[in-house]
Length: 487
Ligand SMILES: Cc1cc2nc3c(=O)[nH]c(=O)nc-3n(C[C@H](O)[C@H](O)[C@H](O)COP(=O)(O)OP(=O)(O)OC[C@H]3O[C@@H](n4cnc5c(N)ncnc54)[C@H](O)[C@@H]3O)c2cc1C
Image 1 (cartoon, rainbow, N blue to C red):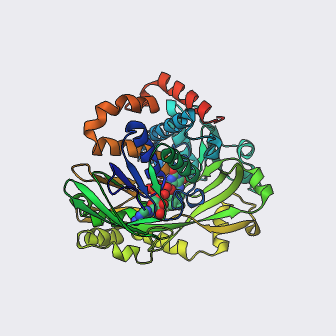
Image 2 (cartoon, rainbow, N blue to C red):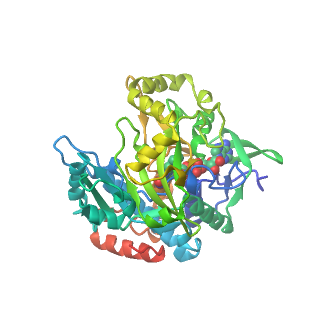
Image 3 (cartoon, rainbow, N blue to C red):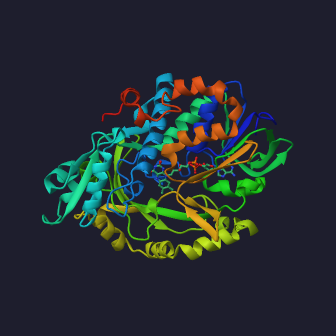
């Protein structure tokens, strides 16, 4: 049960977002009383768990959906640059925590794994245009191009073995890519925060968030009974559970939001010899109608010092908002204010609905067929099916109904006393940028006082690395060194 009935800040949920915010608050305001409440018996066990997400340190080195083609065949790299800048912030905070000894072994949560994009046929021209635009940009320096089977086979032998020699293929490779175990990172950051005074309670589910004066009262339940705490600031970092608590808070800024749950599955390789032959995260092109998070990829993962290999994700549908959520999550989220946006999204996204319908009825043979686009010699007997984490895509009010968003949305009250994070992409990789945004939006009066400390933790805070190549070089060198990255 909470040790006090009042805290300076209460963070709901023990995922990577709350872990990041708890870490920042311990550095910026070491005297604040901070409470983190997690409903499961352990932290980092929902979307942030290693096998519930793909562990890609999203920096747009390989994800083709961050570089849309323009009508004239050139490629727009603005989103890729923004995503890369955001990941550089994460790397800097993690490096700072390693240097300070808050996080002990960087290899336990981040490892160098080259990022590759791989395409066939007509998509080769798009990939070339993407490579031409990115490889001259300082954030993407060192990206390599190959169109011949021999080089691609050297980079990733599974891609070319058994493939017709005349098939038109192409790939890019960026050795700066990373695989991140966000579950291990979450646990490390939260135990670091707990060691520095944050109160962390697992097995404590928050059920209600209600206004009290200028602050909030939170009510919940644990195995020891019900509890109640008061606070001037709440972060609803409960992942898929955030929409319900945002709705309970009744803030007008939360009106019109709905959630569209998309579940995921992976194939995991059970053959150690195949696992050993691959050492990259290889992203391909999404199917027509597929949502951006369903871009297929053949991925080396590193967890507990051991390499694994996975392919996916395959999309599915479940009305649950959390993997360990309730079948009633979706119907319980419908309100008069979000009904029209939700109906509008259903009407306007027929190709997505068709895609999901096809994914749901897939057999194991269909899944292996999709895998063989990347790994022609794949043997179904060497792969097992796993259920990934649950994503709740944001539905937002828009003119004429609603829009479905694939990014994250930080919703906060006008007075900054409560903020909730909805959505999941680019997700965990950009947790630091999202929590910086939260600090700016919810604590504007503290910004001047916090600035020096923020710059000490993250030297590029408030600046663009793309505009300052000297700072970029020192930042990359420092974070590579602290995080033991080998690129
Ligand atoms: C299939 C898939 C693949 C992904 N791939 C990537 C990737 O490659 N790279 C990347 O950067 N991101 C990826 N993401 C996104 C990333 O996993 C999420 O953005 C990130 O983990 C979200 O963190 P969070 O802290 O908001 O939520 P979570 O990790 O889900 O944590 C929320 C926590 O809140 C708790 N909770 C919920 N309700 C309550 C309550 N009422 N009271 C108390 N506690 C509560 C939950 O139990 C949970 O522990 C992926 C996600 C999925 C699903």
